[in-house]
Image (cartoon, rainbow, N blue to C red; front, side, top):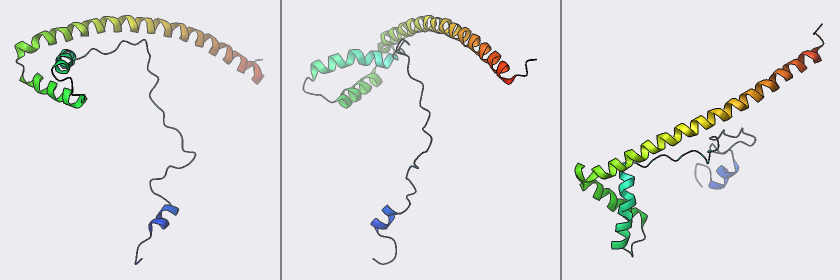
Length: 139
């Protein structure tokens, strides 16, 4: 080969994209709480719940999720505001229900955190007292 490095040379050599061994692991998102209420669907998704059923009845041979989504999007765009109104009302109702359930969820969560904080504060006080005793500077 004239000039440059061969593929074999670049693979054996240092790679700019290689991950260094012993690199610190990324901190991921905290684990999701399975008890947390799911967010409510928007008016479009409420519409899509009904549209999927009717679309599958009319087109039983079509198994493509993308085709259903695309047809649903086109149909939604063609609807007037008056035709969208029932879906918007359903979405608002679901949002109100979601807010109620989130309030109760947050209250339960806050009560649980208060109990944990009280336990931790008791532990930390005893740990601080233990450390003072170990220093020998108590007297």
